[in-house]
Length: 230
Image (cartoon, rainbow, N blue to C red; front, side, top):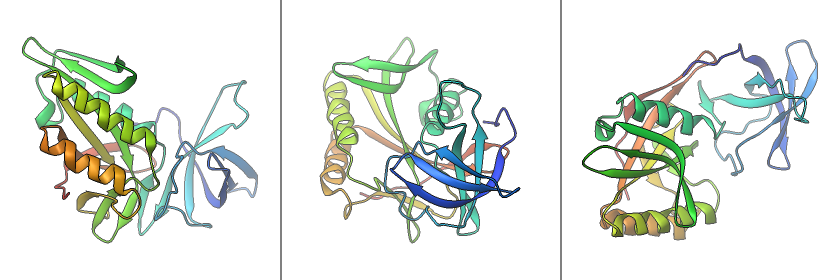
């Protein structure tokens, strides 16, 4: 995925109120950017670190920038939580994920019962619901999810279980937007309920696919599938 417009460099002053970040641009101007990440952003939040923003041309938006990435541990970390959905949709549609190839119809934001899943794919043989999560938390060599307690994520796991029980393929797709990790695992210490549920639903046949994406100021691309531990 290439960014449609050139990103704007700056440095992080502070993140606050979960969805706001003050950034100093190269010319010294201080701007407020929208932060799409509602989690703690643990291990990808460092005041003074280089960041990139995307400009927003929407008169209805109070903030004129969206925070896209931050430079941590000698590499870029993508913190925009809307990017993984786009990456995953394009990758499934183009057959770029080996385990998810062969679908003739791929749609976004499709409802099942009282939940809305990020991707729905089908062909003449099967149907598949896919939930996508953004992963930024680094713990040594591990990428972990979530970085804060997620009741919404827990609801998605329970609904995926309902999907599976109806004989439909169900997939949890984790997009890891950093390159300094080599294995995925749930964050048991942060959200033990979500982690236990993930291990439980995996035993029922719900698939777990962690994908690592390389983040640069020009583009973000899925590069490989990561192993995982539960």
